Length: 111
Image 1 (cartoon, helix red, strand yellow):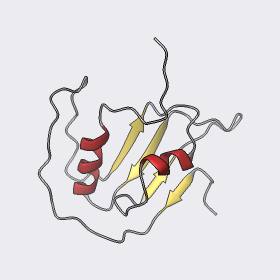
Image 2 (cartoon, rainbow, N blue to C red):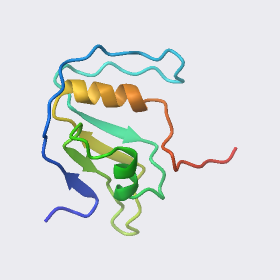
Image 3 (cartoon, rainbow, N blue to C red):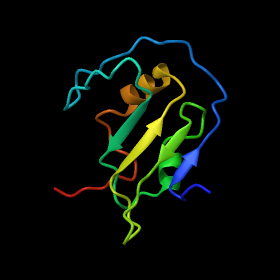
């Protein structure tokens, strides 16, 4: 059985290659990923987030086929990052373009 913080999904659809759009207003430039890459690490996930919260943010629409939210063994708290694998590079780039430089909806911070 898979750990509770892991979700594996079947790939039900494919998307034609799309042109990658760049948002110049972002704080940090996106790094170019290798041509073979289909897995990314999403950082700065709040420690209060659960796998269900991530699925709420990123609906199960076949754009990704694996989501893992690592947890600390002793406290079972999330480590603040997640692994996401996509069935194709265009799915990964679309996700990266949509979420890079953006906060999750339940992300709270104080200045």
